[in-house]
Length: 385
Ligand code: ZN
Ligand code: ZN
Ligand code: ZN
Image (cartoon, rainbow, N blue to C red; front, side):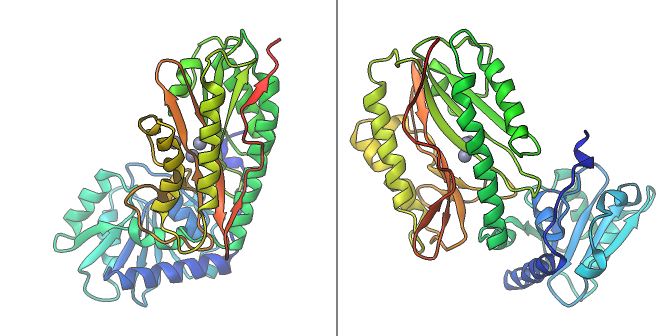
């Protein structure tokens, strides 16, 4: 089955229209005359379809003023937007054919409501389009749309949180199956292939990423998988996720041991990690800065002498993208608000020997936190038979 044929449920036209209105207001508040939204998650957030980015320009033009938004697409790609309720959204569909100048079309649409001094382009816009557009709007300042759009996307509505909940439940069901897949003599890649199938079987549209880091490979946080043969006594980091049909992602890490861990320091170190992850989740509530969640995870790890071995931020926002705002890291003083969703995933990495990470997705509630992943956090010892 091709990905295009998958049913991709979109939010109701009312919800999408409200998002477009808020994007318009956010643009105005940022002294930006128009948002130029590229295909990808920003576009999906606003019109329910992500489209695709190619050398031919596709852009949603959202003027800050009263002029209607318009989706500019090559005529040959218009069919891909067949499910978008353009009339209900108040969005015009403007197609162009080879030989026309789509940058001129976008420039004219952006300027319909008056003089344009500043446009904001999606963070994911390819350089070809950014620079060619600059030629079509030589006097206009280009800024990133990310800081404008993230103000909307960072605060999830109840339907989005429900989608994240279902994604989390789906990946929890996959983790429940992982112990039956881990065995000495199997390679990381063999285990990963089975996990990929389970991810789809449990309700995702695809396996977006699979990390099976056994033994020394577990000490490399973004190791994917290899032909390394898993041995008795190995600690194995399994970090997996993907989108459900609504487009919202799961992302969950658990650490397993195939038989009792061979390395003598595993139990003690893992207990520190578990306490750190728990402390960071407990730190989450409205008003707390994102940096405080990072600090809460780092404190017990540093106190135990492993500070240098926790080599990444504590968490990232999640939604239509696996990694999005807000980021739980030092220096981010953003105050958490209800509806923000992100990972809490400290790790401790002993280079050349073993590593461990525990990751849950959590949502900020009115008065605290709701962890979405519910599998046990302890080191899961798999019988090595
Ligand atoms: Zn990552
Ligand atoms: Zn992860
Ligand atoms: Zn993550």
